[in-house]
Image: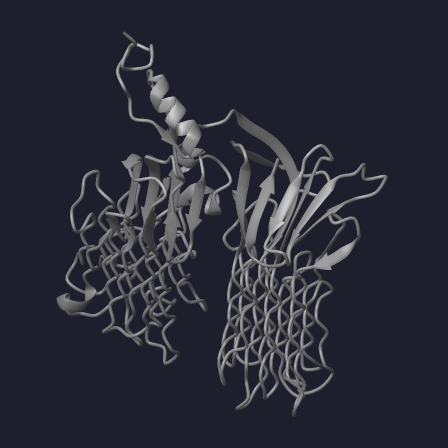
Length: 604
């Protein structure tokens, strides 16, 4: 009589054949598991809290926002070929007024795992009702100039095990001023303001690293959920004080002299930096930074410990879920995100140009991308959209990220509208013409080598009132000047496709005279008063759109992904608008897959 287990003796162990498929969700979506997947590893990070407001003509800074809740699971049971919803939490709004506690972040979730939004930072109001930090995944920092100390919000609220975050730091009264507390982070409590000695606000609590679970190459290097730093006071009459730094993992720094609280980095769950009071000064308060949006990572596991019977193996082979031998090889890549639109200024003034989409490449001579899987290999490719031209009187719209495997390039930052700074992004947006504004920060979130440059600053005065140009892949955006708009920063040339093509140029700033140029690599020219609108960035270059001049800004150009593999490999690119070509000598027959729309790369 035959053995019921097919001739193999041993316990039957649960197996999971997920092919190590990894999904990185930066927006709410649905993930459908592989047919053989039974176990996944997950990281769920909620939106960070916003920085608290501060009292104009007062003496204190707002508390830093708490990081979004941070939860990981190395082995979570799922069903194969099943769709699971993913929700990505948004960051809470940063506030300016002293009666406004920073907004709380919102929840992120995967299946039954939910992480709570970070708590908003307290304000520098004398009332206990306003200066306490809010509770959340991690708690917001306490504001200054209230009951001493003004407690930070409680972390790990609602409670889960292991804890999803930490408590925010306390705001205090220092003889030299009124330092606030930093928001709590996933890995540490927020720092409290110094009660004696130098007047320094609390640092944001450190975030936590998920790379040991998911491997290298994750957005923001795999470190998430850092708390926002506390804001402080401008110098007068007590000498002022230093803001707190943001916690590692996307936490924004507190507001400093002439600069608002820094926003938490997008898709890290970082808390926003607290606001800064202008002590006995009629100038407006420097507002708190908004919290960073959350992120969810799901890795479908391969696990088959012990033994299983031949009947089960044969069934899995028939169903196509039995894992084939692992395949691994290196490819060159070019990943360019969507460029941002320029600011729109139809009612008056000249806006900044849009920043180029993030530009990341291994070609030529850089570190190639290792693709590993269980045949046949298939990898999703996301092409970032360009930012759409905004409505009347608004900053430019940020571009969207482009993604393949572990490589993510960030969308460009929108151009500023009067008065306003450029947005951060792969490359930053240029400033509007008016006020002491700054160009948006490029290479945000930071990667190495950098994926872009800052937008142009110093918006110009009469007669041209030039807006700043958006940053490009290889150069910062030009400053706006009295003589004209700042040119867009130059992009970079790349011949991975077999021909040299420029990508990721910044958009030019709007002006009343001497129209600015867009950066080489698809950047659109700036608008020109009275009736010439900003030019759109070129499609599939990641170019930024030109800033408006008493009119609309141009939309950003969409991104592109190109993969180059050895001649021995066969590539496929779907849908049909994407292409695969074979390069002639001297490239030795290398295969090149070019994606102009989102799709799937197959390799055999």
